[in-house]
Amino acid sequence: MKSLLALTTCALLLGSVPVLAHHGTSNYSTTAQTITVSGVVTEFVWSNPHVYVLFDVKDEKGATVHWAGEMNSPGVLKAAGWSKNTLKAGDQVTLTLRPNKAGTPVGLLSRANMLVNGKPLQIGPEQ
Amino acid sequence: MRRCLLLTAVITLVPLWFAHGQGKGKAKGKAAEPPPVSVPHDPHDLNGVWRRSGGVLTMSNETPPMTPWAKAKFDAAKPVYGPRAVPGGFGNDPMSTCDPLGMPRNIFLEVSIYPMEFAQMPNRVIQFFEWAHSYRVIWTDGRQLPKDPDPQWMGYSVGKWEGDIFVVKSLGFDERTWLDHFGNPVSDDMTFEERYHRLDRDTLELNMTITAPKAYTKPWVSEKKTFRLAPNTEIQELFCVPTEEQRFNKLVRDPGSGVVTK
Image (cartoon, rainbow over all chains, first blue to last red; front, side, top):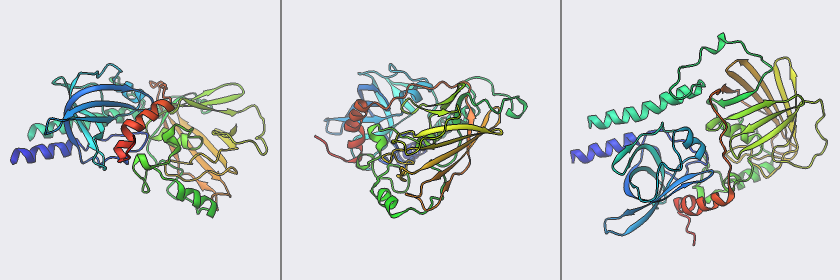
């Protein structure tokens, strides 16, 4: 129980990292609420004006759930050190997202604490 | 738990440190610029990339009273920002389909994330906006504003110097634009005045006034907006691409709002 509390607190604290988006974030929960999911990237979409990640996650019954993680523009990501090659299909990822209020598998992706193929992805500052 | 707190502190504070540096026109990993007051500058030189610091995403928080025509437009607008925000898939912000933002909304968007750039020429000033890779022309060749022009997303603009203040007057706007992220309306009789004042090398102040009797019962005077010179920033190619936005809406925005599409 203690470890669960610590994990939850950690998630809440990490979720407080500021995220700005140009299209508004009214779909998503407050910055204090985040979830962490692990899966496999199916497509890293480097498009204008939004970059996003499509990835598959196994639910508790073993079924595949298609997730999407919204990011900012290529220009903003480029300024933070990202490129079209930062993620690729097949990467094993652990991602932190602000879930949406509708309860569907779409979230606002935080760049702050990502694991890619088991290693922390440390490229640039969150914006 | 201790490691979690340390990790959280690092993740939270490092971005703030970078963001603070960026506001001072500092590149990643480079030393800070010298204090702005000690550096000579030409107050009539607006060239360069500028980034806004702080402020609200509209003229001011004191929206003037609307006419019934404007109130109906305002009520029909479903923004995804601010106190009236709806989930993205249920909004009707023209931005969500890559329609041009127009003026003055482009100015407000520069505040939050994206920079702008001035390029002065002998007969005009070009103002580039990173959002949608767009620009406007401010004519400085002495021409007058057109009378009863056809509408344009950016309007028509002329500029002249009054002392050290660059005064831009614009009209001929398209009513399909929103004035800001919050759905405040634009009317085709709107005149828009901008007063740019470069206080020192790194600081550009902007005061704006909107006069639009069809929409607002009195002029809307902005709060003072402040831009900082961003000498190490390059305007990025940030198009709003309709086909890519459509795919984004289908895969991310709509399902993220609970909108079911087939």
